[in-house]
Amino acid sequence: MSITIDKLGERELDILKELGNIGAGNAATALSQILARKVDMNVPQVKVYNVTDVPELLGGAENIVVGVLLKMFGDLQGNIMFLLPEDSARKLLGMMVGQEVEDVTDDMSRSAIMEVGNIIASSYLNSLSFFSELTLIPSTPAFAYDMAGALLSAVLFEVSELSDQVVLIETDFSGNGEAIKGHFFVLPNLESLNALLKLVVAKVDGK
Image (cartoon, rainbow, N blue to C red; front, side):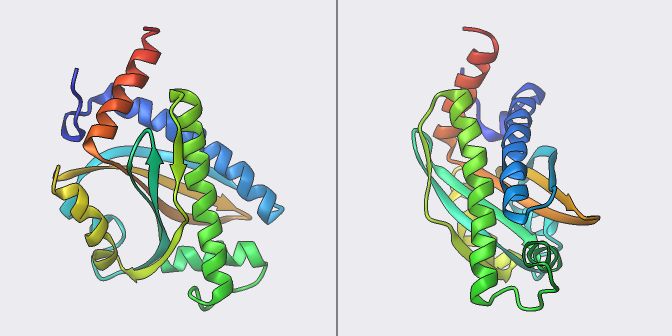
């Protein structure tokens, strides 16, 4: 069996969504402990998008976004991105420090955003690793602040060489009445995605 991004069916997407939900639950718990307040996080959708359409999901290629970029190593390789529109990043930082935040690029804000991105990515990979019994290791997170088109182009270029489509897991946060929109991108290379889906499908089937 060979499964590629553009051949993902409802069943494979449901598996990825369930893994995303488990990872989001773990991430919400970790964030709640950091913020000392309840944080809800869910995964409303997992979809396959054309590479060229991704910047529009972030408000357009020229929209400023803030986030974290990581590499995935171990039994699977690929990229992970956690990106927020600038206003959502400001809200998230405000929840973390307990006051309004204007500059999302100062040292404190950069450190906080990287910590959140690292928590979310690690929680997701831990859930994936537990379920698949694969060894998955995130790289050190790198802070990102740029126009969505510019930021995505370098990472998506690696994917677009092999496929014109990517898997997107969209996350929503809420806490203290503040709704925050975040986009969590999981971009395994095609060989890794195929290996992962074969493994989890077999596990679901009890083989």
